Image (cartoon, rainbow, N blue to C red; front, side, top):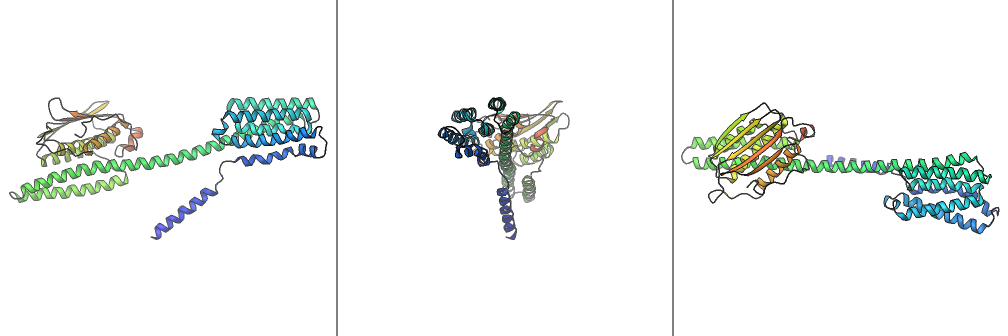
Length: 412
């Protein structure tokens, strides 16, 4: 209980730290720049501006349009709306009209217009717009001749205002997208691990329980006639159970790697206990650990299906390796019919679908279906040099696979 309380406190502290971290800038950070228009307001208030009513309406229109454009520029959907570009164009018209008509301190409207343009325009349109505004500010300042600062300073200030604003906003957007991507990757990793564990658990327990059932039936049949043989089957059940516990622990930690030779030995034992003759033919060079692990899963699932869903008397495993590809074929001579046990819905089909996705992720394939004459055939192919991203997924399948659609007969 104290551990849970300590974990909860750590979570709360981390949440508080996340909240204290500075987030992306808001449109309110650009509102104080409107104080640059105090010179124009002072001229109006002191009566130094001709036609003060026109100047007052122009100042009000400029401030209103500036605030509207800035607030819309911080929302992507609104920023890309035609309405925003109309408002920005209207702001430019008011700016040119006031600066041409009054000059002097009204020329400072150009840097403010550039700030608003920096929140809306992007890429080539931004560069063209800022250069145009800088040149226009210089030209009007030279023509009026009453600017408080040199014309080139006004042009430079106009260009740099929009450029810096746009750069900061682009950086903030990139950081926000990276944060969202990191959260999405974390969620995907959790889903991937959850799916890996569920698939491993299905494959492990499906096979193990099938072997336990078969050996339990054999022990029940042998007990009245041969107690020693029955006890031998019971000992096998204990061994299988202990091995299953070990494999489940390994699956939980995510480090389980299967071995094709080990799985073939287990297949012999399970098939023999079920009264099915196992035949193993293997040729070719040694396989990489990842290929061994994947083919071991195929053997495990195929044997489970043969024991549970067929009336076979013989099951053949053929492993044929070449320099580039390895092929595993599992063939039984069973015939599904009234004499055979009814198939268990979902077990075989789910297992083979999962194996199809695993092999597809490793560059291989899995084909399963009825044989040409009788029985059932499972064929798995893999490249010999299984590696890359699949290295860690041989024993732990990827969380999301896009393997080929399986035949309706998979798992029978």
